[in-house]
Length: 162
Image 1 (cartoon, one colour):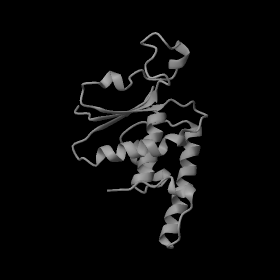
Image 2: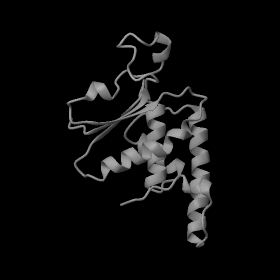
Image 3: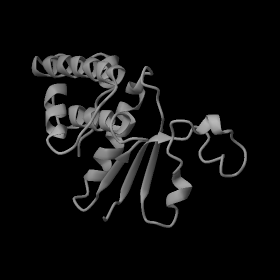
Image 4: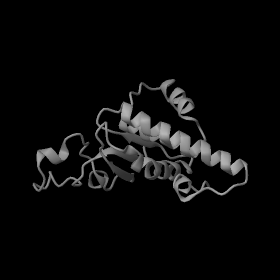
């Protein structure tokens, strides 16, 4: 497959301590138990983001995920695998946010782009956070076109594209 980067959108909170006998089963619910240690020696760059319940604020992970994906894909030979427990909601939501932040896509455009090649089912709460991101990005782009400065809230979505 040639995967060079892995973004685990359902990383365990205790980073595999269950395997070492220090965490409970409850700590691993809704996680994919493949932390950075799992990929040691495989020449894979790993990023683990915490698993979020469907009602939680996943937007905290939008920028870290977008930065990781963007940095990885600056090299045209890189391949990024983004996964979560079922591959339908968390990972899809983070990839949609990446498309919106780094490729100036509107939320609808990003969803249309992805569903052409893959079935996704982001939770309603995650979709709501994507809509908020969309509104922030639209305002940020509008202010930029008008030559006005963006406030600190808007700057949080900026990634230096090199």
